[in-house]
Image (cartoon, rainbow, N blue to C red; front, side):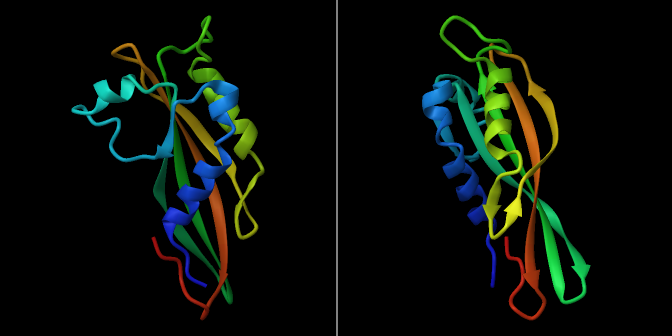
Length: 148
C-alpha cells in the first residue's frame, strides 16, 4: 500500500478542526508559505492560526516489516504568548494541539508522539511556535513503499 505525505497533513488538519470552536482559530490548513517575509503581514490578519507541514522522515528497515518515521510540524500563531481578554494566546493553542494529537491515531494505526515544541518567532506583534510530532507509518516490504 503506498502512502503520500499529504495524507498525514490532511488527517492532522481534520483532527484539529475542533480548535476553531474551542480556541477561535481562524486559519487551519496545510502550510503554504504563510511565514514567508512577503506574506507575514497578511497572515497576521488571520490569527489565531494553526498550520500543518510535512517535514520529512526516514525509513527504518525491520526486515519484512518497515516503518517510516514521518515528522509533522504544527505551527501555532497568535498575536500574543499568553491568554488575553478575547484571545487564547499561543501557549493555549499549543496545549490544544497537544491535547488532540498526543497519543492519537493519525493514519493506519500510527500514533502521534510529541518530539518538541519551540519558539519560531515572537516579533512583529505575533508569536509563532512550532510543535514537531513523530508519526510512525508501518508497511510491509514488497507491498509498495512510502511516497511523499
